[in-house]
Image (cartoon, rainbow, N blue to C red; front, side, top):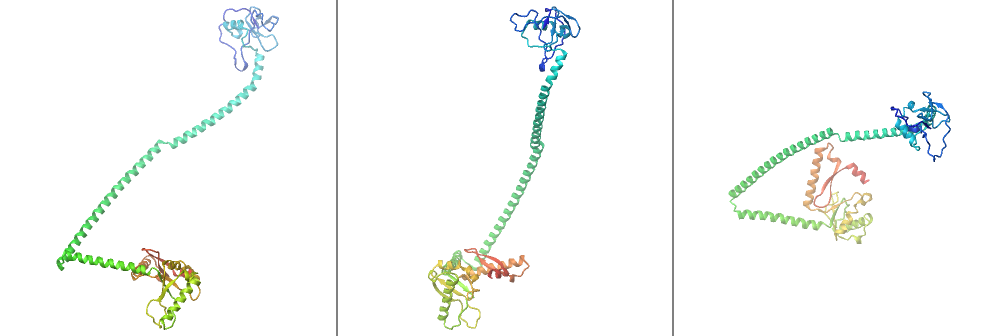
Length: 394
């Protein structure tokens, strides 16, 4: 409630706070409007709670808006400017309130719980913000480590050094290759010149004409070609044959009887051991290799010729059954029928394998078998220990 009329301004800068429910009290206009819903309380003479001045209708003062007691404070004690007081007097709908000291303390106590809740929420929010900032700093540190410019520069320098070393190595290798090529070319030229000189010497010493030399070369080539043709024909002829070793030979002096015995033996071997019916593997003929000599204890090799190549291949694919065969088939070995040139080549391969074994191993060659394996034009030799061979045979 306001008492008094607007007067001269009171120059002061003090004002009550409006946050958290604290505000300047609402003054009551001097002449209330006729449409005001609240009826004005009857005025009772009282004094200012601070300076004790008597509050009259002409005194500019504010009444507490909360407590029941009739507590007033003059505008001078409130340090309330005159224009603000005039505004409070002229505006009945002003939402500002003024509380005395006792009511203001109560209001502070009432608002403390809300302030604590709000303060706790702010603390939680600040903690979350700190966590977010820590994570952002961690991510920035990791990014700085990954994108360290000094490390990148060092890597680039090392790469550049490696590239320079590679380029230098390539240049050296190119130079070495060029030098080797030049050396080989010069050597080839020397050899060509040497061959040319030898040819000239041969022509001069034997007085051979160019035509005679050509005839001689053609004759050599023809001979070799004929040998190659004969070798191929011999291979084709022997392609359907196989040779059996260590097959017991009958002691009969009659060659026909021995031949009948050998044919019966081969037929029984195919049927009982290889499980091949004689009708599916027709034999053209069988005969012994070498001259007959009844005094020799070692049987001669037995050559078996089939009517077709498929029958021979069927027998060769069934050789695994010989491992478990009993008498009289135990110990028999079977091989292809090779030409003399092929046998010579195999001997060379076996001898070469023996020499390699001697050069790289301290064990004697008698402890190993050297066998030729592989089909086609490139056979190879394998080395098998005799103990392993005996164990596999058992």
